[in-house]
Length: 363
Ligand SMILES: O=C(O)CCC(=O)C(=O)O
Ligand SMILES: [Fe+2]
Image 1 (cartoon, helix red, strand yellow):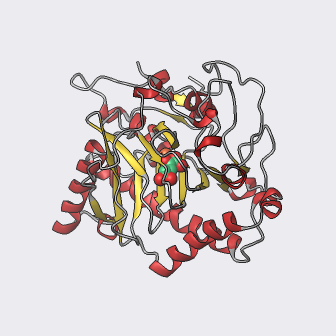
Image 2 (tube, rainbow, N blue to C red):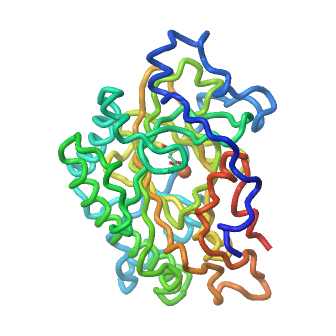
């Protein structure tokens, strides 16, 4: 199955709308809240829900211990990884080899970019038909409920496919730091994919074999301005990621991410500022034949504080055919997913229609 093929319905006229930040500047309070952002009863289970949700007990994994399973600590950490990914589908990664100061520089890149004057940011605005660049939701239908977020979306690898015209020249160190982060994450993702395979008693290249030499990494700085009605507006609608693995650098001070577990929303904590939040995307769920879970998550808004995060989506090369690793298919666990190529290409059309693209490849 090629995901570049049939999709729910073709994109309709697209309208580029004002950035959320501009809306906040131009409207003085909730009387002016545009209806296109508002959830009404009946949309996705109705209201956004309670604000005192439980915090999740998210597993913390020392990824420096995942390099070898020959020591007892390595073995324990691999077991923790397996259990984290098959129950939650996510964990906080510590000892990833990046200094706290470096992560702070990265956080500052996003904050400083979104704090630039509008005219300056508009130099990097995405084109109507392009995902990349500065902007907000692609509007594909009148019914679409918009996300209360502005983004800067950049392709990071393959390096020769970077569109540098979208990479801000201000802050000055933007390109250098983001490039360094990309290189670090590339190593981390390789390490994780090997460890995931070993945790399932597979050969360590079992997932990497489906990954290709020109793997795709895209970075998205998400900026959530304060919102007058967090009870009616979401920062990001419920979704699971179309990636193989996503690495999220959360805001240091402001929470907002929530995961769905046993039909309940739970808050992702920000208690470890130097941790990276790693979550499985649909493509690892497919490759692991459903053993590892691609969790549904969303971002809520905050009436007082703005929030900035950086998500990096890591996926196999588009031409690679991915599917459940053969050793994970047997009578007890029949094949759950078809083989698929180019999984992320139609992701957003499903996303905007509240559909999970992974349902389209289930057997
Ligand atoms: O900003 C967040 O906390 C979540 C970001 C996210 O889920 C995404 O960009 O896919
Ligand atoms: Fe996500």
